[in-house]
Image 1: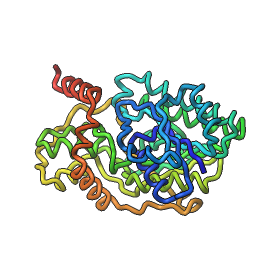
Image 2: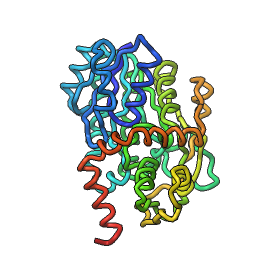
Image 3: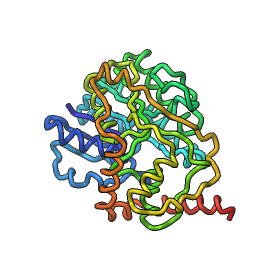
Image 4: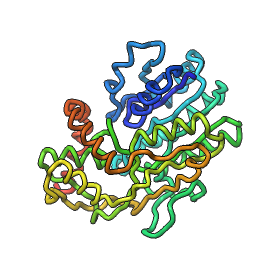
Length: 341
């Protein structure tokens, strides 16, 4: 099987490619990535010498000519679409890149896949498209109506609807996956867990939105990658599959767990002005994936967070390298706004 993986130099895409190449000697992967601030070609640079199994292509998923050329020249069997702008704070600051990549880019991929007769198209989405849950509401199922509350989640919901339409209108064999919050190796340090680790180990204040009581369901990235692979191989076209880690906890609990693990004082926590439209709780019902795909999360949160911290401890150079000027500038502006500067 020859896959086109989009966004393979990002956090989840990197882990998916490494997982698949390690577990399936027959698979070949072409990785199309724009290399935005969160994309790191170095994650997979060691694979580039093996042209028979892995190839990197630098480009934009919204470039129709390039995408059509790749699908034709590489005889792609299936597309696994990870590429997305994904940071909610950035979408609040400027939503235009989210519309370009998440909506227009997804449309370009779907149209090219339709023309090329691609056999499978896995569209990777997020639990955020479902909106927010109350403290006692049942977890999201695949039938939960979409109710996105941020420009990011709205752009992902729009891309989900395009994917659904291409199945129902054109018969393109699309499968949609939605996951809860991921964590693990290679995660860019603007997200909660790596940001907390990074600031805690430097003795710097750790920002927590509001009162820290927002609840997230955390899934270890390899469990999510195994779910995407299961959907690719055994999923039914036209269906949605939820993947959750069965690990709900408040943001403050998550931050405290990391502070305790690295021996940093909890007094580093700084409660900051809450994000506009901040969803209170996410929780995923993964019953369909468990029943139909034979999938289930294998890594509990305590094990996964310990493994993640060990990875960051042994990859300090990676953390330094990925903190680009664009990332630093964004965070400096954010902190200046918090301080009222």
